[in-house]
Image (cartoon, rainbow, N blue to C red; front, top):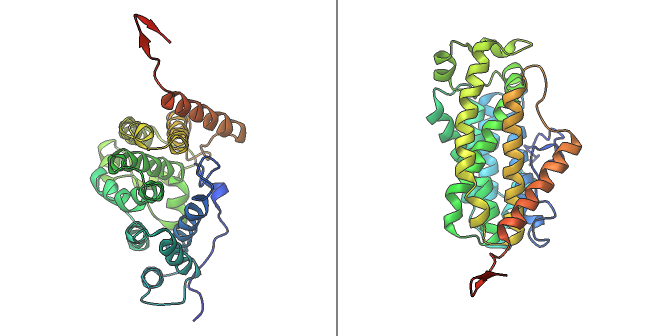
Length: 290
């Protein structure tokens, strides 16, 4: 059987946030990259403008079948992920949840309200964080703040790519209820610059994203290891930086992202925050601290 994959050429280096960075334990990095490769393959299928919605769904269904062993060929990335799950002993749930989101991308063009968008993030974003936590054997208490942080990352990405998604895929993640409430329209995304009403819509979404990031601050202390604490704090710090940039810049006029130097500086600041968070508290002895 020929492969149903349609690689776009996108790689982890083009992502907003580090994927399997050196902060991750060396023995776990290949598993993080395997998961990314699986997700990247499904994303490329869902975003391929040359495929019909029906064909996208068929291919994503085949990826699920190869992942679970119901089919043995057709998707090398799913086969590799199946082997990786066997090696780690993890269940395929996070991978299958991701495929639910990509099937939504294949068939769904609009989101009615914030709740509907968060339901999408439950499948498109939360499984990514949970897979990393599961690989590390992190406590279940880390799931809730991880879900919040991952949802925030997803919304940030939607706002960065809102013009491209509308132009190339006629896909709009901005809640229709928010557009209407702010006096904006979907067609405003086709302009060269953000209108005042669309700006208000962005700011409304960014306010909710900032609330998710506040909840996500509970993840680094719950991560269960120094390396993962530093990794998640770096990602949180980058998310906070991008949210601030989206407050100030126009995502219709430019791709809003830090420079390479800015990315590195923000990442290092996040690592420092993680080290500081994980440092043992000073011990008080006889009225003195040491």
